[in-house]
Image (cartoon, rainbow, N blue to C red; front, side, top):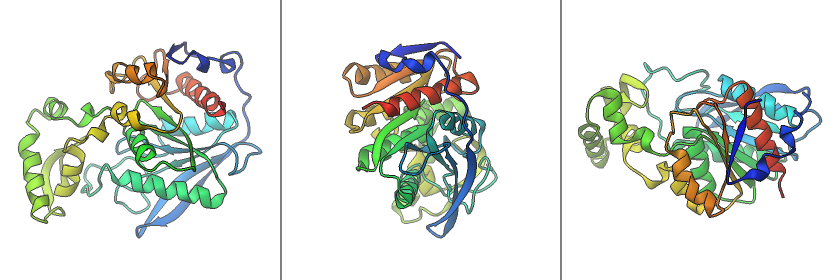
Length: 304
């Protein structure tokens, strides 16, 4: 296992460091449902001998990626080994029965805020299956979307929240855009906002750099949604209002959200969140870091 560093939450470095949980048999099953006229899918992995009424995680992936990426596939297996079942969802991103990475050649109509509605849809699906208290878990942009949902849609169905290297807003800032693409964001954003204000938000902007996609097509409304500055894009800002126990897991070698430890520290000092840093883990928490992540999450979920 990788060495772990506790920041403000030494209790998390408990018994799971002394012995790894034995591997348990678990089977992954794809669930398909209809949402807003689209087929949406998710991977359900039930821990051995567990049911929907036991510990359950609802896991949301990062930007333009998918539920079968190695970070999430490993995490579901490692959570199951800890006796925790999970549902890893694929955000539709406006596409029918989406699988795999989002193809940048496909026009973008999705919005950052669409994820909140889909998290709600899948949480209600879990409730319909018998889950009464679910741990919301999200990674990277999915961590921000998870925190946003947990703060603005708190309910008895949410037991607690685990955020894995959640976004801080800089990832879609004007400075980051210009550094990545060598051009200013504001003229493009102004044009998008003008179209939205004129009721033309569905107009497709062509040859536009957007998120990770160069020279792609994106609706004005989608571009405006991702790039207009909102305080909620900054996860530490959101967490000032979080009501449920929250764990923020970081990697010491993470260069995607390098300002996260500094920004989360005041919240940890104030007792609003617990934090854990995995030494040498990068943004994707693979291999031993993934095992440690699952073990820490399971121990956090077990706290009363």
